[in-house]
Amino acid sequence: MSNDELMSLLRSVIKEELDPIKEEMQTTRAQMNLRFDTIETKLSRVEDNLAAVKASVARLEANEPQDIVGLLKQINTKLDAQRDLTERVSDLETDVKVIKKAITNQ
Image (cartoon, rainbow, N blue to C red):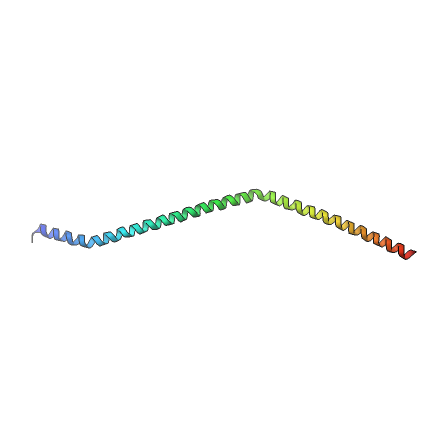
């Protein structure tokens, strides 16, 4: 066999050995690209959701003082009503005492 024939034979043997490896690498690369695309899509969704959560939190923080003031006003109104009721009960107790005293002194 000549040198050229040996080289040709060697090239064909190497090619036969490398072709399956090359195909496997291409398949692996395609799978990896698909996985990366899937990960990028999911990451994009997570980033969108995070932006929505941040916007919601910002709205809540902006409205929080107004909400607290509103709740404090409601509490104050209820406390005023409670004070009024307590005062009325006290007045009624005084009236009952006066009536009892008037009844017992007759």
